[in-house]
Image 1 (cartoon, one colour):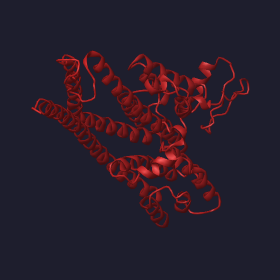
Image 2 (cartoon, helix red, strand yellow):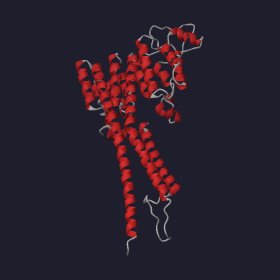
Image 3 (cartoon, helix red, strand yellow):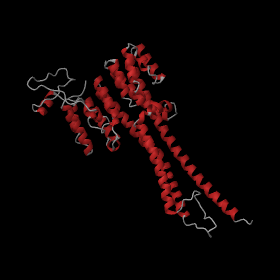
Image 4 (cartoon, one colour):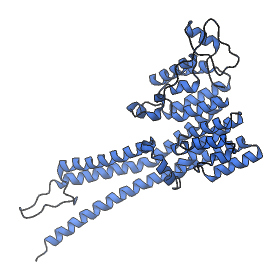
Length: 402
């Protein structure tokens, strides 16, 4: 059942103005004196994946905010608290941006929008994954379960991020110190002068960088390299130029990185598909919404082929395997579940397994990133030592009697 406002709350706010009837509450009958109309449809531009603004980068909610938001709503719904009352209470805590977004979500529900639609209308504040999962939960009638799952998901993600930061903090500090040492060498290099016009001055760097200007050139080069790498990483994250179609098949078999990429997406897909099938939602809608909940454009691009296979009368396992994008383990588990009549339960267990694998892979990724920084520092130190030693040998050979 989708989350919508009660009749009394809608009437109290409408003041006779046309609004939309509640499309998810079968017992509600619109008043003849004030016919209700549909509110404007949710615009496509409200999808954060279609925007390229600074707000899209910095305007969203934090992990802590989303974890607390999902946890409190799950607790309230489990206790029987009305969604509007829960949102009204939630709109009184947190930052001003958070309070405004939650309050506007509550207001949109009173106008007749579903919870998922109201959250989508907040622009980039709510993560696309959370919105898709909430919409899947509304279609399956298990919104409370979705919020509980997403609360655990954000809690795990927050803990993993903290572990990741703690793992790479020391190597990053050492990398910064190494860069500062190189800057100091470049600066000191500017004080060396030649004894005569025919002699070359000592060059500690080996590349001719000297003094303050050399330090600025060195830092500019590092900034350009960092900017390029950051832009590439952000473009891959946002699927610029539809790059996931090429990169995901190459990366998903790479240890650690590929495991994180696939297991997180498959965990979300398994959970949403389990909820929708268990609630009796039709297979075509279940597959479509569960694939969209992955947030993985490589899997999403095959959703039309999956739904077409279901339309042709094929089994769920055969339909999901039609684009040949999902791993064999997932398809085999689903096929066995279909044969035994426990497809929903099998997918739920599979979601837990994928989630545990993702947590382990994220920890391994943090350790790998730490070692990568260590190797970068070691490479820089070795290069500096080699350059200085080479310059020292050149100075010795140049002063030998001929």
